[in-house]
Length: 193
Image (tube, rainbow, N blue to C red; front, side):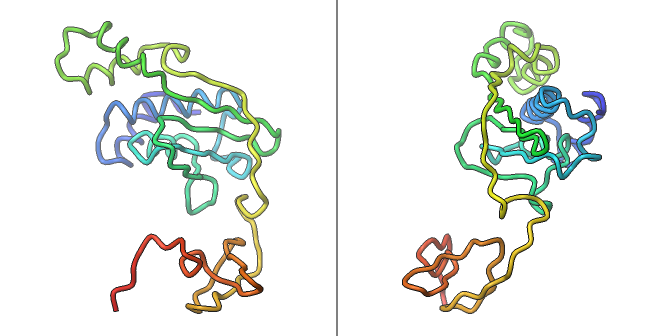
């Protein structure tokens, strides 16, 4: 595993700047990997799946540390709006959910009251505080369905209504008719033509 400073440099480059969320994400991912005993996530990338619960700065940092990516099917997003992530060791069948403690912001204010800028205060404190003051970690059980695993292969099917291809068993079958989720009423978009 790289050092905190090495990961922060990589995270800052990947995200476009370094901020408190990046520091928190790097620390969260390093802590999660440590709890799982995974020292080199890149070497064991099919062993790890990570669920993130927020689409903010920390998620970019978590990707940098874990090597989990959407394109590798190893990063999963659950929009809970929480600064939390669950790190799953597929080989050992273990997982830890780590959530940032809201009290960490107050601790940052206490530790660095001389700094007016909240981001600077939090960036510094999040580097220094022990994991136990930054995070709440819990062992959890996560069922990762076969179709959600990295490397899963399944037949591609076509939507009976729009004709678009559907991968990874994401189709909906209603009354014997195969539909994509959009045609089944779950579209996030509206056609304008």
